[in-house]
Image 1 (cartoon, one colour):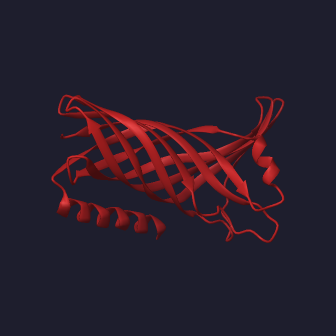
Image 2 (cartoon, rainbow, N blue to C red):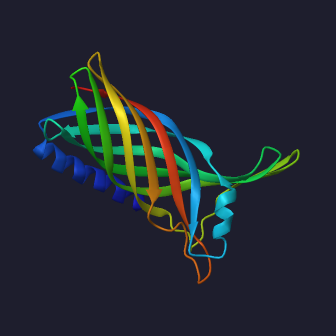
Length: 212
């Protein structure tokens, strides 16, 4: 049901954007993520200094609806990996979560016809579809797939902000994006004194948008 919600959200945004758009471009996106957890309001907050960024992947589809010379609306449908790591190469605990995510971004572009800079910002909605935790000590490593419980909050709402460059190439434009995303919802229900956990993700990606 949550996946249907995300697809319905994407459809509604697309229909509204199409009705006001001067032009439309679309294409694929692929890139990397570097993610960790933010801990707050609990006894374990000091552990945040020990948390490290865990690399992952992102890929999906992008549509861009131009509404003026400077401003466009850019909904996306992405598979994106988030997670955390604690420890070093010999002994660690790490988690990797696989989300289906729909960012709906406002994009402000500036520059020449050939090369443009841009800034993006807007809300995101995602759903945790699967994940895996890994524990390593010495030569021994144990990997376990996530088994979700009732207290897990698999639906995530957040925000994304970024900057980038677009270079006109062939039938469209090559876009390089650097973004920072942060979850606004807690990853699971907590009791008094327990830390709230939220995702923090740095993403670097390339997209090619057909149409100018």
